[in-house]
Image (cartoon, rainbow, N blue to C red):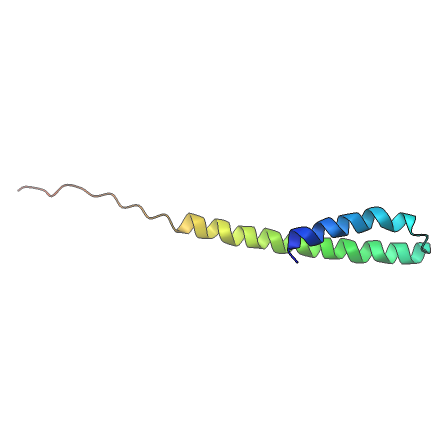
Amino acid sequence: MSKSKIIILLGVANIIIPFLGLPSNWKTGLFIVLGLYLIYLGYAIREKNKENASIEINTENYSESYPARKD
């Protein structure tokens, strides 16, 4: 499952959890676990995007050429 789908499912879980009738300690625990997992996924996606951006920047090569001098 892709990271974006997992983030969407975690968002849906955050919406549904308050209405499940769970004890408040369980709700708090679930919110903490889901929040930590969202932080992890956000960090992983950020690092992946950083990697891709640095690769794109480093792939450009430019060299200026001058005509040969006639002495």
